[in-house]
Amino acid sequence: METLQVVTMSNIYVPSSEMRTILPLYESIPEGDGPFPTVILWMHAPGMDDFSKKVLDDLAMAGYYAVGMDSYLNGKYNFQNRSDDLMFATYDVTTLWLKQQPLADMERLGAIGFCMGGRHAYLTNAYYDHLKAVVSFYGFPHRGDEGSTPQNMIERFTAPHLSIFGSEDKGIPMEAVNAYKEESSKQDLDHRTIVYEGAGHGFLNFNSRNHSPEASEEAWSETIEFFDLYLK
Image (cartoon, rainbow, N blue to C red; front, side, top):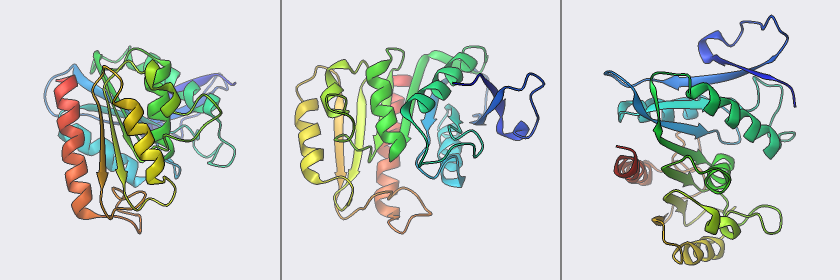
């Protein structure tokens, strides 16, 4: 794995004198004086696009210092050739960078992800113990290697987790959602599973043909309420 150097999205084209690979970040800063409760965004399959940036901006409007990493490294990788090792390498670099930022309150750290990123948000809750709240939108709780699906790793979660799905998601059968919900209900942590009837995969994404304004409004309200409960 190559060495990663963090830059903000505004400096994405600045070359590194040490020939390191640049990790672009998009950050959105709330009004007022920090440090702020902080949320890391796991990007969805299309990457750090305008939808992802709007999610970060909306988090900032709700009072969170919000940061999303471009784990495709400005086009060097894509959905077809990415790997979990790559994704988590960018996450590790991002958290190290955040520890140096006076705006970030690392004692009030959360994560959120959509689609592919929703699955990574699940795995983050299992692999790390520094999160206080995590939200996954349609995050494929049934996918992964044998023994390492989010559902099978629930016992390793260390933070409360909100899971949001659409009942008409063609990639996530309701059997998988119900199995995850049943397993999560056995845990002591606050695990919440919400299913929006009639909504398809990617319903929060305004660029998606499955976009549902009504479900989006309700789901985002639930998201902010959940983060407020555990991060503020």
